[in-house]
Length: 541
Picture 1 (tube, rainbow, N blue to C red):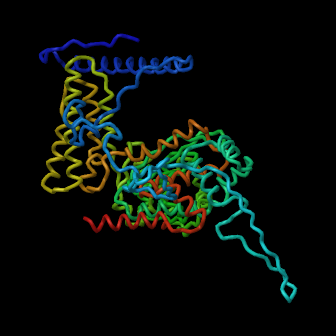
Picture 2 (picture 1 turned 45 degrees about the vertical axis):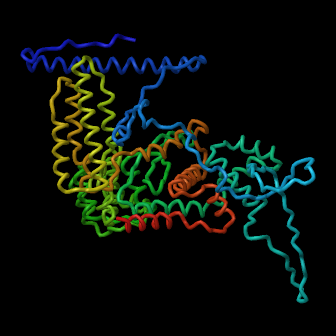
Picture 3 (picture 1 turned 180 degrees about the horizontal axis):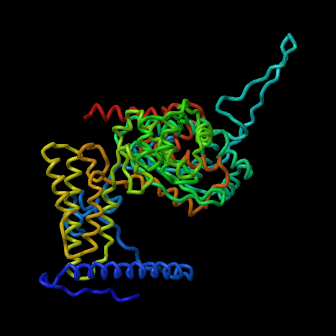
């Protein structure tokens, strides 16, 4: 590893514009070298792991969110966090007692007096097969017709509802691959094949798929803001992407071949295929540089409504719009225009990590503060003044972030302009660290997105929720690789969405699966619960 370069301190009297420019170049080159050293270190770590050795310790993540919670972070104070499990509670008070046994002392002496009971609760779990033979009586009526008994409504096929729910739970919640799942079931006495397991996981999922699609519609209808993120995904041996849309009430996933803006706009429409050319859509096309001649063709043509993507593509071809870039801009424009016909998209804020596909002109957009601060955190100072400047700016950023969180909980019009002025002061200041100055200048151009919370106080200041939710897709990719069929990909997205949403709503995913598999439907539809929670929250304001 190369030795880190340390620049000498230069007096202000000697800092001519040329000197400042040269220092900026040196800082940029030094940072490039440092990044290359880190990449070399990562490659060495990978080699060490392959050899069975240990890798270097990981860098600590940015502590911006924790530093602004107003909680002490010292490990030595009175408020030191207790270890997990140290808070005493009754561990059996909420348990359901299924069996009770009374045990007398052995060799009880004559004349002893009964003094009550000393209770001991023992938890256990029974994992065993339970096979039922239904003998359907067959009868012939006096008219000669043959009738027979019918199976109970919860029985669907040769595997009961508990087994079906267990297979889904172990695969989608515990991430057990199908081969290991079959091995486990065989050891429990279940005679089942690989094909039957696959059928239980992917077959007859229409009711789950419908509930999953309605999740997004309900979440968008009642939410003031959503956070978004995406990650890589392998499907049929090809690279693809999984997009997450959600907030504290719901989580929704969709895996597609692309992660561009057109794909994102299509997902936001929540399954709506109708397309209409609107003034907002034409304005989007003009802003994105679609030639005026093509815009006029679209605007003046007699046909303005299209049933689906096929009809829209045929219309573009008929108008002579055949270049890939022109088709993409026109398709983005018509989707964006259709979204803006709904009033909810004039008030719903999209919070992202500044990836280009999530920033759609015309839609409200906010940026994640943690990602922005992370850029400053990752800068490599070359001398003590650089380190001091970096620490100063990060401290100012944490203080502003903490006050923005307080403002979001209790909006105050008097503080709004003061917070905006503090933002200007932080991001327009000049330090001795040229790279830091350049970064602050770039972040300052995102002022509207970073301060969206001042106009829409219910806007999250970070995308941590999306990153936590989508992490499971990353883990699944490492365990199982990719999906092989379109049905399998759809199934994975469906149950990942339902599981994460159950967790956010405080519902047991196991109980949900069992309820839906048995057809009892005692748990209300998840979209309905999302709307109920939003209504209750609105009444509390």
